[in-house]
Every structure is written in C-alpha cells, then in structure tokens.
Length: 125
Image (cartoon, rainbow, N blue to C red):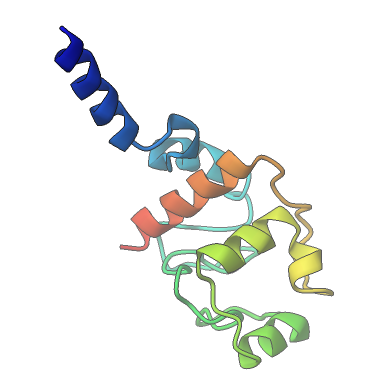
C-alpha cells in the first residue's frame, strides 16, 4: 500500500498544474470578446486584421489590412507575435504598441490570455 501511494504521488507530480493549462475551448469562448473586430478562422479582415496565422507573424503585416503607423513601425522594428509578445499585448495593447488603433483595453485574467493564445495557435494551424 505504501508503494502504491508513493507511485501515485510521483505520477501526480509529473502532471501539469490545472491552473496553468492552456485550454483551447476556453480560449474560443474568450475570443468572443475579440470576434466583433477580428476573424481567427478565415483570412478575411474585419474592423481589425484577421488573426488567422497571427502566432509567428510580424506585427503589422496581415495582407490587405490598413495598419496604424505605430503597428507597422513595431513590425519593422522586429516585433513578432510570439507567446510572450502576445501576452504583453493582450494584457495592455496601448502599453505594448503605443498609439496603435485598437480600442480594446486588454484582458486582465492571465488564464484568459493563455487560453486565447492557445486557441489562436490551434486555428492558425
């Protein structure tokens, strides 16, 4: 019995914490806050650029979208939408890219941010 307990404890220690899990379905729900302005599953731009393929994309480069000078300049300076940059941007878009034209104030829940990034990575392919 003692060995069973030790073995189970070891296995549980290897599992990732639930609070840190990236949940694609939860991210899809969070993305509803973004969907009025952005698509994630098509290449069509809306008020904002398509977010299909955004993970790994240079900022300000979605084809056919008219970006702010600030976003184009950020991309020209090397800003690429990887997880750390997306996390910063989604937390406070105006702090990450000042004077960009996105009016959304950001997501405040770190789990929502992780989940929406997981969703974007999943729909991006």
